[in-house]
Amino acid sequence: MDVESFDRFCRDHHTSVVRTVFLITGDRQEAEDLAQEAFARAFERWKTVGMLERPEAWVQRVAANLAVSWWRRAMVRRRAPVARPGLVEPPELPDPELRTAILQLSPAQRAAIVLRFYADRSIEDVAEALGKRPGTIRALTAQGVARLRVLLGNQFDMSEEVQDEDA
Amino acid sequence: MKMHDELRERLSRSVEPLRPLDPPLDRIRHRGRARALRRRSGAVVAGLIAAVAIVAPLWDLRSVGTTHGVSPAANASRSAIEDAVSSPEDVLANGVCTLWQPDAYVGFQLTSDGPDPVQICSKIWLSGDLSGSSFGSQHEGFSFQAHDSAPPMIACAEPGSVSVFFTSVHPTCDDAGMVPVPDGYREPLARWEQTFATIKLTLTGDVGNCIDGPTAVQTWRSALDANGFGSWTINDEWRNSQNEPCSWFHVAFSEQRIDIVNDVSS
Image 1 (tube, each protein chain N blue to C red):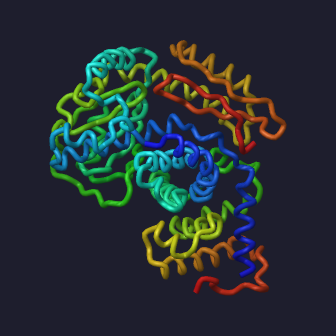
Image 2 (image 1 turned 30 degrees about the vertical axis):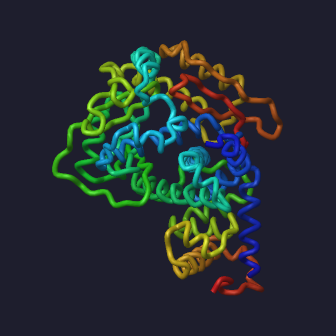
Image 3 (image 1 turned 180 degrees about the vertical axis):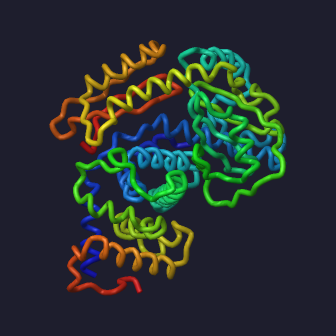
């Protein structure tokens, strides 16, 4: 087990994984915990994961799935898909409207949007990460973007928008 | 296209100030090793009771850690574990049900007046419901069924946490390199709940409460001392910073330690 290479990998990618999970869960503490869990899973299989071309994509995939599962359970527990004020949304971060709007998407839409546009992954990558077909991801992304547009009151400049860049 | 670009930009900008602490590498590795152990338990149940001598080298025991080992050193450390979990300052707040199928385990939180660990895991096993109010499943992706009856289970402890096993997997806690959950686990837990209630009220009671490091340390110290956790340590990593003036905390149950850090979102 090459612990040093794992540690280096962890330091290099920890922040981006936490941010990805935070965008999906809206909960900073959970984001850190779920990111740790994703990295722990990578450590568990480091002999294999460490050999991948992009091990960070593997971790991001696990983290995104953990985040979606966490959100679903949280919804069941709270019986409402609302964020816990204060503990969930650090108010000092910019653009709270955007994150609030994102939290109103379905978990699958949210994960697709975050992986596609924040983590900058291809449709195929996102499909693989979320265990869905590329067509489904296109649909989820398009639905999510459309919903964001409504929720954000057309804040986005639509003048040059193409309906689905990946279609 | 433009909207997608804007979305990319706004998403990046919106989390850019979120700078988590350096990854807690020790903790991450520990979690990874614990997962490997659980996976190994699952493999045993699945019928791979192949001789440990054959299987063990494949698991890279060095990466699995020593907690569940069967060496004389492990035997010696078990009495230390026993002492630790019987201490009035050891809080068994978190647990995990290992549920037969490889990689299937469900995290839970114990409460001083709630069901005991075996009751919690039996209920999950019987109901097939992983989404109950006090549970947090950590497994991924398979559908879990309800069962007509629950097989015998055993609740075992190590400092700061509990694991529940089927006795067909680990007939005794000793076999799992752990010790039985002490009968009196509820008492420290009740004191912990009291401690945390005080902390929560002071530190996170109001949205936007901004508590500096010294205040957080003082608040934790007096709450811990008042509730019989005098030997718990507080690791003050908070640094006075104009950009990040508020504090945050992490609880390390197994080390009986509170880490006070800068709230990076402040």
